[in-house]
Image (cartoon, rainbow over all chains, first blue to last red; front, side, top):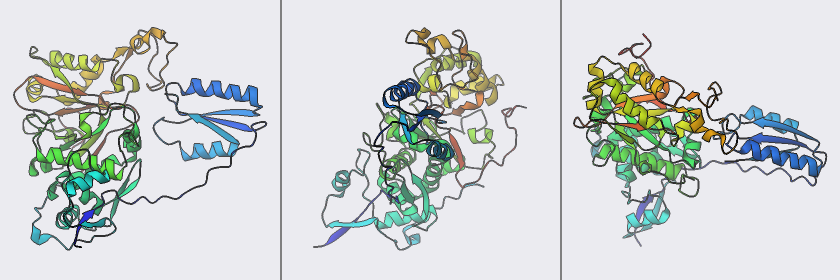
Length: 95
Length: 380
């Protein structure tokens, strides 16, 4: 059977798979980092959620961080700071 | 630094270096339908690419089909020259449009533009391209009558090639990675030239420090144009007050998220304004000073709770009677003269907000090299 040529317009994606962090078995005694993406209602949603986690699940400490812009990735230095100072992280859009 | 757009003839076309992008289907396959079935269109039929047409575009792009120009978010597909050429052909581009399309893709993927956000946002923003300089004339772009409308191949297919790249390489498929609630018609094509021939003002790119012989492409994440009619005023203030009226609503994204916007003067309005000696800087400053909203309107008088609005600059007063500018400075208003020579119309084009900064790029890759001050626009 004769053929004709067609062309894929998508370009190649070169991606590296990274494993997810292991899920924490219990929240008690863990340090919680909260990353606020600065969307309209993120602040309200995240602070209330963090307060509930602290009151009901024995979170040891809460640290609050803000992204520079809700539509851009967080600064790698900020991510490193959060990873170094916390055991778990909470973030949400809060549009 | 004038552009060199060489006509590409079949005799110039080097053998096509197909790589993994080339596939085979049975002879007789309806290719228009086949590309639809793959999901590789913008909803309109594409021109099925042939090796010869792709090779002509690759040559016009400078050869080297494997050269990676950029990665296009949010999918981060690799835009090689071959992939760009495939999308250009599918859009219906002539090879001589290649320098403009290439420069636009590089401008769009500059970090300042934040294409990842523009592609994925629920807002309706789409990249608007405005081309300046000799290249626009050389490839027959329309900056005149009905410039934002249909009917011109270069405008239509350059803008469409960009959209196909955003869809196919960037993965900005509606409902998947493009989450726009409404979209807008410019998501098919949104590309014009400035009407330098009929403009009484210095061209946009000259205001920004390029020379008139340079060619540039400007990209801004933008809402559709909002018409501004004024058939009454015979002075700059009256015409610009109408534009200020279009700017001064709380509905568009600049009002609540700051950032950059574009203003388009129709040639008749531009002549009236320039006839009184006003420069680009005068115009942008007037628009900035006389547009805006009271904070009480943006805060809805606090009736839904205390509003601060973190998307506006922190140096704005939040008093209820404070005036909140539409954009932070006159330099955040990008002014163009576009349109036909009959009709007293202009347009306001809101941007997406502070999340994306427009990018102006030399078609040949150079930066500003012209005089420091032109047309009184550089704070003389």
